Image 1 (tube, rainbow, N blue to C red):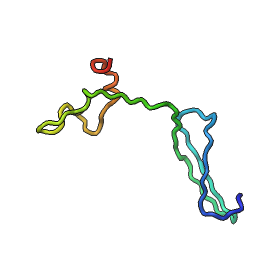
Image 2: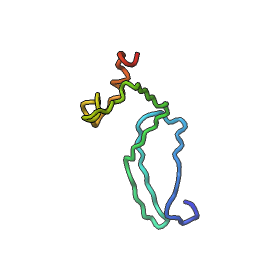
Image 3: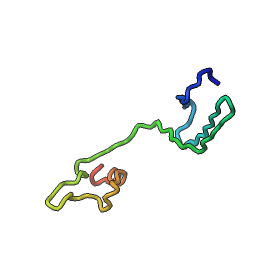
Image 4: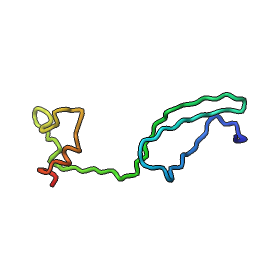
Length: 91
């Protein structure tokens, strides 16, 4: 244990040698008088790949008198993967 009596602590997790993927972390803390607490199953993702973002201006919906034109039928989802693999607009 450290000599100081601060109420918070900052630390880092070295990821050298850790493979990309989903990981779970269990954290346990204790003080000098024996009080302890534990949090299990803290999920984090290691992803070192560069992000891929492809956009074609044809996919951008236009705006007309009645609102957006050519917008996806599900307004909560814009499927970039489907657009990317569409060889008609992305050869």
